[in-house]
Every structure is written in structure tokens, then in C-alpha cells.
Image (cartoon, rainbow, N blue to C red; front, side, top):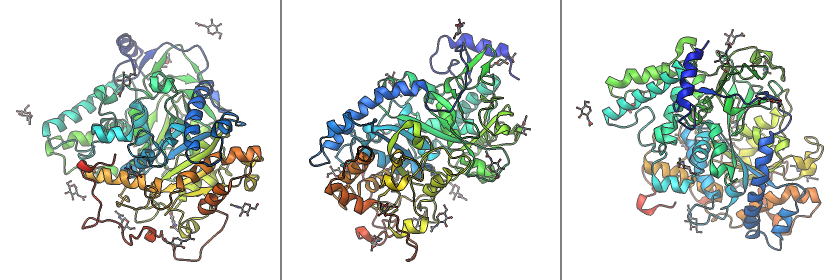
Length: 603
Ligand SMILES: *[C@@H]1O[C@H](CO)[C@@H](O)[C@H](O)[C@H]1NC(C)=O
Ligand SMILES: *[C@@H]1O[C@H](CO)[C@@H](O)[C@H](O)[C@H]1NC(C)=O
Ligand SMILES: *[C@@H]1O[C@H](CO)[C@@H](O)[C@H](O)[C@H]1NC(C)=O
Ligand SMILES: *[C@@H]1O[C@H](CO)[C@@H](O)[C@H](O)[C@H]1NC(C)=O
Ligand SMILES: *[C@@H]1O[C@H](CO)[C@@H](O)[C@H](O)[C@H]1NC(C)=O
Ligand SMILES: *[C@@H]1O[C@H](CO)[C@@H](O)[C@H](O)[C@H]1NC(C)=O
Ligand SMILES: *[C@@H]1O[C@H](CO)[C@@H](O)[C@H](O)[C@H]1NC(C)=O
Ligand SMILES: *[C@@H]1O[C@H](CO)[C@@H](O)[C@H](O)[C@H]1NC(C)=O
Ligand SMILES: *[C@@H]1O[C@H](CO)[C@@H](O)[C@H](O)[C@H]1NC(C)=O
Ligand SMILES: *[C@@H]1O[C@H](CO)[C@@H](O)[C@H](O)[C@H]1NC(C)=O
Ligand SMILES: *[C@@H]1O[C@H](CO)[C@@H](O)[C@H](O)[C@H]1NC(C)=O
Ligand SMILES: *[C@@H]1O[C@H](CO)[C@@H](O)[C@H](O)[C@H]1NC(C)=O
């Protein structure tokens, strides 16, 4: 299949360069780790267990600081340090193109103690153990993770990362630059192909993504791997949450999107799936190695887990559209380079698919799950992480072995024609747990109509507030995480841009981020000054339940305000009510949009 001699040649180059052994997009040979390269998904990896010990210490300290400032008559250190198990927070960032990435960026900025001006929620990000993203959301989580856990504040202040003024498909109005850009990407893809690995549209997309997300890095991260995080100081020292990206397995030409699709998890240590269909993980560093039931042939490969490639694959929504290429609007691209651009997206059409290929398939011939079609194939086919209808990547965060108490679900997806969410992703995650593919634990949620009618997309909502009501999901109800749901809605900006919008002017970008910040903070505390306290109440809830501690009156009031109490409401006309802040219509192009001038930066 591949030429061994070429790989050997590459391995000589590899000795001088870090990151990918070849220093390019091409994977190369490394020595094999002398162990089986698959394991059954019976729990988290040993590496993750070890990492968690360190991260728990850091998040405990940050959490104590956060809780102390929010709760009255509460001994935060005693509570956190003597908890029956570590209190773990997780954040899931939905897909939805740049809309999702930018609005979620505003929400994360509100959670981040490095953002100027106190949102009331600063420190949540520093207290979080896990941070997952898929599709557009994974551009955000991947950008933060791979840039030494930079902050949104820093991204906006420096202005290098996420230059969205020129689109990925038209990097600059400078013809020479554009031509050079496509030539370089073409060269990167050729490197990978020459090393014997299939190249697909996702490789192009991955490079395009990297130009935006890894703008500050040498060669735009062409040889940077997801597994390289293991060696990043900021990760090793437990100063950042563990990032996940989600991808789904999908057979080419099966245009049916199934809730039972196999979800693939990318984490700094491993790649694989919890789902009964596959139920195994492999060390992510050795992706690209030929394995037979987890056993290598003595020659191992590294460098396949290119960070941009995995981020691009997680956001490869275009494989839903047969005619993606025909619909690409390339008119902005100068004619002389248009064909090169087109050829990049057509690259490796030899198998006539727009799927990302993981070839060789690391799970080849390993029968730990039930889906024989996956493990009998030499190729694992991958597609956009949101294509199973779960656009918030809750999946890795609700696995019982991760012991998460509270999950923030940031929903910046599109369910309604106008581009706003209606909670469908919550329902799909809830239902999946009862299917053949079910593994996680998720609390009860209402139907979309009720969600809309009870204003749960217009203001934050808590689900699973009472563990006693969850015993039909898990014997001990307090194993099921409490979910804090934050949905996109307009405050100062029409943040319902379409998923295909790839260009944002600077003021539009800042408008999206600002609006996200406002959705997370209840308009920066102006709608409810107790909101940060209520978040603190939600964070401590499960541990209180485990210990049988009664909620304070302060927290009871919060739960009254934000918890779904089981009510079903189909009475009124569907629609998010945006009138609660006196905006009958939000800002718009022609007039009342609050434009954030660079001279008046909020971040
Ligand atoms: C591989 O590991 C086994 C035991 O785990 C050990 O006996 C053997 O010496 C190792 N081989 C090499 C080449 O390290
Ligand atoms: C939020 O409000 C605080 C003051 O309460 C202010 O310092 C900060 O700049 C505001 N942030 C944003 C993003 O509006
Ligand atoms: C991340 O930090 C390391 C030092 O710990 C530095 O060498 C590297 O250049 C940084 N990467 C980025 C993208 O800033
Ligand atoms: C673009 O390249 C051409 C030929 O290489 C050169 O003559 C021209 O000056 C370049 N234009 C710019 C704006 O750099
Ligand atoms: C998903 O469901 C479809 C139809 O019920 C079935 O054909 C397919 O094998 C299932 N896939 C998995 C991975 O369970
Ligand atoms: C052994 O595996 C490597 C990749 O891990 C592959 O390049 C090579 O072709 C394989 N050799 C044989 C003889 O199958
Ligand atoms: C394609 O892009 C050009 C330039 O960006 C724009 O003027 C035109 O309206 C677009 N066409 C479509 C069909 O969107
Ligand atoms: C692998 O999957 C592809 C695409 O579905 C299919 O054409 C091929 O026959 C499969 N190979 C095997 C060995 O099943
Ligand atoms: C919610 O969104 C889904 C698509 O995600 C749509 O099918 C459904 O009709 C919507 N329901 C309501 C009440 O908006
Ligand atoms: C954004 O939302 C508003 C209100 O729902 C709607 O009028 C507008 O058409 C939406 N914009 C887009 C691009 O869908
Ligand atoms: C949980 O149970 C209590 C009674 O124990 C009930 O009042 C409440 O409505 C229930 N909440 C949900 C979400 O079912
Ligand atoms: C939803 O919000 C509107 C005003 O924004 C309010 O009139 C209505 O009572 C709210 N509905 C519920 C169930 O709280």
C-alpha cells in the first residue's frame, strides 16, 4: 500500500524536527511503543487518570475562589477539599460554523478570569476539567488549546489569530499572496500523498482552518499534532482544561444521518469511541500505524494526528452536500488561481468521497465492539462531529468514568429557520442514552416547544436539578450531571448568522463575541445580579446531594428561577420572546446595532 523506503527516508529527516516526525503534513516513522495499541473503552486511560490528579488540585483552588465570592455563609475550602469526590466542571461548545465559534468565544470570555472587566463568572473556565468542541465549536476549542491556551482577550487584543476579514477561500485581495497560499497548501497535501497516505477534502479544509487558527505559528502549524499537547507546558502543568474534539464515523454515500452513528473522540492522549459499536481507544500519537487487532508490524507511524486535520475533519459539514464543489462561491478568487483553489477541494477525488480517511484503520480486525463493518474495513471514514444531530459535544463529558458534576452546554447551533437554537441537541443527547449506542448519563429535558415557551432559549436553564428525580437514569441519581444550558439569542448583535458565513468584518466579529458574552452573563449582570450566585449553586448541587446537605434559601431561590421543574407547556405560540430587555427587535443593519469601535474595545 505504501512505500516503506519512502517512509524510511522520512524518518531520517525526522530526527531533527519536533512535532510531526517529518516536519511537514506527512506522517513519518517512529519507534513502536512495545505495547498493544488498542484498549477496550472500559474507563478513562491511565494517562488521563494521572493528569486528572494534577488538574483536580488546580481546579479545586480556582473553584474555592469562585464559590467564596458568590455564596453567603459557605465554607468553600472545606466543601471543595473534603468533597466525596472531586467536583468536576465541563464545558461543551456546539457546532454552527463561525457563528458558533464566535458566540461561544464570548461565552468562554465571560468564564475566563483573563478577560478585562468582571463578568461575575470569571474563573469558571479556570475551574473546568474538560472542554469539548465539535465542528465550528472545535475551531474555538482547538484554537485555544493549540495556542498554549491563549484567551479570547488576547486573540482580540493581538488581532493575529482569527483574521476573518478575508475568507478562507480568498485569503487576501493580494493576488500574489493568494496564489502563494494555494501553492503552499497544495505542496503540503502533496507531501502527505507522497508519503503514501490518502488525501481528501478534509486535508485542504484542515490547512485552511490552520491558516486562521494557527496564524501565529511557524508554517501555520503544518506539522503540529494533537498529541503534541502532551508536551505543552500549559497542559503538563494542568493549567488548562483537557480539550476534546468530536468526529463521527460515517460510511461514504450513506446520506442518512443516524443518531446511532459511532462518535469518535479526539483527546490529547487517545482516539476512539465509547460507543458499543466500537468500544475502544488507541494512543492518538500513533494514528497512521498499521495495526491488526491492536498489534503493529514493528514499524510505527506518527504525525497523522495533525491538529488542523482533525479540526477540519470535525467541521467537514460539506460531506452532507453532494454538490458542495459546484456551490462553492469562488467568484471572489482571481480567475488565475481559481482552478488551483478548486483542485484543492477536489483533491483525492479518486475514491469519490468527501469524507476524511483514517487509513490504515487503527481498529482493523479488533472486535471489541459490535459493528463489524467498521473494523473489517482498512479505512475508517470520518465526518463532521455534528452530523448525528447532537450539536453540543456532551458525549465525552457525560461518561460516568469522568465523574463530571456540572456541564455547561453552549448551544449556538441552528434549529429554527431564523438561525436560532431550540434545544433539539439536548433532546437527541437525552434520547441517545436509551439506544443501543447509549453510554453517557444525561438528565431529563423537555420537548422543543416547551423549551421555547418557557423561555429556556431566551435565558439560561438548568436541567437535572434534583438527583432524586434521576434514579431511573442512574441508580444513584447524583451520578448524572446537572446541565446548565446557554442558548444563542440577540442582545446587542444579530448573532444568528448562517453557518456558511466565513467572512466577518472586525466589528461583526466583535459584535458576535460581545453578544455571546451577554448571553452567558444575563446581559452582563443587568437582568439578574444574582446569576453568578445561581451558577455557584448549580456547581455545588451534586456534592450537596451526595452528602445530604440541604440547599440554602439563596440557592433555593435560584433553582426556582432557573431550573426546569418538569412542566410541559404547549400552550402558547412557539417563539423565543426577546422582549425581556426592551428590544422588540434586535439591532439591525440599518440602525440600532451597537457597533463596537476598536477604540472602545470591551475586551
Ligand atoms: C517489551 O515489553 C516486554 C514486557 O512488557 C519486555 O519483556 C520486553 O523486553 C520489551 N521489549 C523491548 C524491546 O523493550
Ligand atoms: C461588564 O460589566 C463590568 C462592570 O460591571 C464592566 O467592567 C465590563 O467591561 C462589562 N463587560 C462587557 C463585556 O460588557
Ligand atoms: C507555546 O509555549 C512554548 C513555550 O512553552 C513556546 O515555545 C511556543 O512557541 C508557544 N506556542 C505558541 C503558539 O505561542
Ligand atoms: C506579484 O508577482 C509579480 C510577478 O512575480 C510581480 O511582478 C508583482 O510585482 C507582484 N505584485 C505584488 C503586489 O507583490
Ligand atoms: C444504525 O441503525 C441502522 C438502521 O437501524 C442500522 O442499519 C445500522 O447498522 C446502525 N448502525 C450502528 C453503528 O449501530
Ligand atoms: C508495517 O506497517 C507500516 C505502518 O505502520 C507500513 O508502512 C508497512 O507497509 C507495514 N509493513 C508490512 C510488511 O505490512
Ligand atoms: C459570490 O461572491 C461574490 C463576491 O464575494 C458576491 O458578489 C456574489 O453575490 C456571490 N454570489 C452568490 C450566489 O452568493
Ligand atoms: C470499505 O468501505 C468502502 C466504502 O463503504 C467499501 O467500498 C469497501 O468495500 C469496504 N471494504 C471492505 C473490505 O469492506
Ligand atoms: C426545532 O428544531 C428542529 C430542527 O432542529 C425542527 O425540526 C423542529 O421543528 C423545531 N421545533 C420547534 C418547536 O421549533
Ligand atoms: C436573525 O433573526 C431575526 C429574528 O429572528 C430574523 O428576523 C433574521 O432574519 C435572522 N437572520 C438570519 C440571517 O437568519
Ligand atoms: C422532581 O421531583 C419533585 C418531587 O420530589 C417534583 O416536585 C419536581 O417537579 C420534580 N422535577 C422534575 C424535573 O421532574
Ligand atoms: C417568557 O418571557 C416573557 C417576557 O419576555 C414573559 O411574558 C413570559 O411570562 C415568560 N414565560 C415564562 C413561562 O416565564
